[in-house]
Picture (cartoon, rainbow, N blue to C red):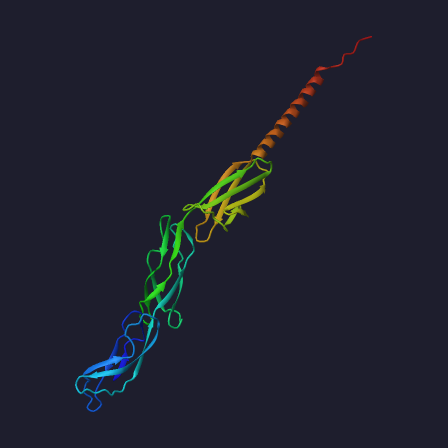
Length: 276
């Protein structure tokens, strides 16, 4: 009894195709009967299985003696691990990455994976990604297991507060949150007119600056991984500076007016001289 397999590896749960070529030794006529193998042709566990004839049922001559070779079949599958960032800007492509290997020997998977859905979204939503299909270039396997990853397609919102009441000092505070669930945007890179704003609390960034002008121009740039740059622009009046400057101008006017009045009064008082 001679046996051979058609494929080096097959999917777990599938049925191995083993071709049995059995002949009578005396005249090489084709064996007429049944050959019993050492293992089931279907296996649900990964591994290498050996197949050989362990018995025959000869319907023509009733023979029981036989010779046989062995063949090995590897039942295998691909193990896939997906990874992705938890949030991605609406309209952007989610960077879904993966590692994959063959379960039997741990060798790196050679082929491609197909995901269950498009990797971008034009609206705010939670998207579940998993593998729907594999294309195995090495063994032609179709069986696999994969994890799921959840990506929230989101946008950023903000609340900006500018305190300009103290002369020459402006305190700028911006609170950043995700629009989908109002969660704070943490560990962002936030710049105010090119200077780094410090994260004082989760999602809350602050910077104090010294300003002498009566008006301040605010240009905030927020950078978050997998999001477009978020820009906030505003012009604000430096209340403290303005009040101080108005007060100084008023004081200067008062002093000038007082000086003017004093000079005028002096001109009115002209000393008179009597004739002798």
